Structures are given as C-alpha cells and as structure tokens.
Length: 149
Ligand code: RB5
Image (cartoon, rainbow, N blue to C red):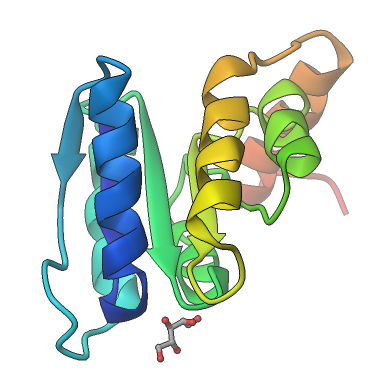
C-alpha cells in the first residue's frame, strides 16, 4: 500500500497520482487534504511518514507546491528517507542508492505527465544494497546521534 498526502497546492496532482496508482492495481491510502483550502504541509508529511515508519504503508508520496516543505518535514521523522525529485533519474537513484521510502513532488514544478513518469520510475526501481546499505545505515546512525564526529 502507498500512502499519499498533499497540501492545498498539491491536491490536484495528488488525485492524478492516486488514480494512476489505482489503475496499476496498487492500493492507496489518501490522508488528504481533499480541497484547495489553505492548509499546512507538515500535517500531511506527518500522516504519511507515520504510516510508513509504522509499517502500515510500504512507501509514501507527498506533494506540496515545491515539494520542499513536505520533504523537509518528512525527513524529520526517524526512519523516513524522503527524496524530492523533479525528473526520473533522481527518482530511480533515490531508490537504488538511498532506499528512499517517501517520494516528494512539487506540483508547481512538474506537470502531471512528468510527475506520473517520476512515480512510475520510483515504483519500479529497487534498492541496490551492498555499499549503499552501509551508507543508509549511517543515515540511521545520524538520526540516532550515534555517528562518530
Ligand atoms: C504553499 O503556498 C506552499 O508554500 C507549499 O505548498 C510548499 O511549496 C512549501 O514548501
């Protein structure tokens, strides 16, 4: 299951992406927002991030105007590795090298067509492990304040 959330700036793109995911047979939990009334992006980053770290969702997708606010917010949650992507190469590498568990998109940055390509690339890519596992482990150590200075 993929958890998806957006603020008012991302609500339309969220609906497009949710429809795309469902058309591919992927279960979606949409945490909102559901209209264009002004709202606060950290609230949706928290909802999606918690579903991912609690293991309820396999991965998450977050959208705001630039994607920056949701990515900064989601990355404050221990266990979340959120990647803000505007093209498919970064989306693929965020899975292969960084084991990103949340994809962030800027609805004012990318159009619907590019966004769906990014989501498709991100879903199809797998974590490569090996030397990248050591680096991802060090991200976890940074979160715990356990990395040697
Ligand atoms: C909302 O106007 C906008 O600030 C928000 O969607 C996002 O772009 C913040 O990073």
